Image (tube, rainbow over all chains, first blue to last red; front, side, top):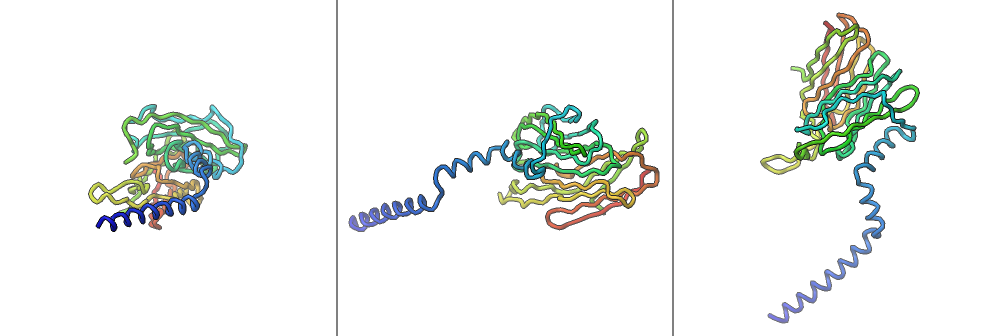
Length: 156
Length: 103
């Protein structure tokens, strides 16, 4: 009985040792895992999304974009937003939420028959900045506003 | 019955188009309260608005839009009797179209 038990313990220790070595070898180096952590921080996801959407276009901060959104939202599942702009020749309006797992909300391509005006309702997981990027024939312009979401909106 | 409700209003020479679409807009991270299983993502991906025969809005939307999405846009000019056609396609391939005459 005791022999069996001893043998079993020996084997299991040896096995776990092997498996540790095996996984250590298989997994990437510690530097790689650190890289992964920095990649998943929210602002980086936002930057990546912007990069993917607009390539390497220069995006300029502008005060000619008006975002109407409540400063505090009691219910993150439905936050009304209205975007208007006094910029000329608006071709598209995109809305992004910095801390949502997928930042992009929507990208609208507007024809010249439309006023630069979009109104909709958003889901916001946690207190975060809401950014709007307006595309005109002269380039890209951005503005953002912070929204505080009071309860945990993650399940909504 | 169509899932899209459209309302239009003539304002200061412009036409405001508002729409309300019945859609769950699930982002795929919610869990069923009874079975605790993940509810698969189900959201509108494409939104197209036509004015008479011209496409005026093409939108790529994601699951960050609230359940039963609401959108409003303003059309420059526009006349009574103009036809507005709105259609959507979701990530599961479902689609719907609705026509509306500006009044």
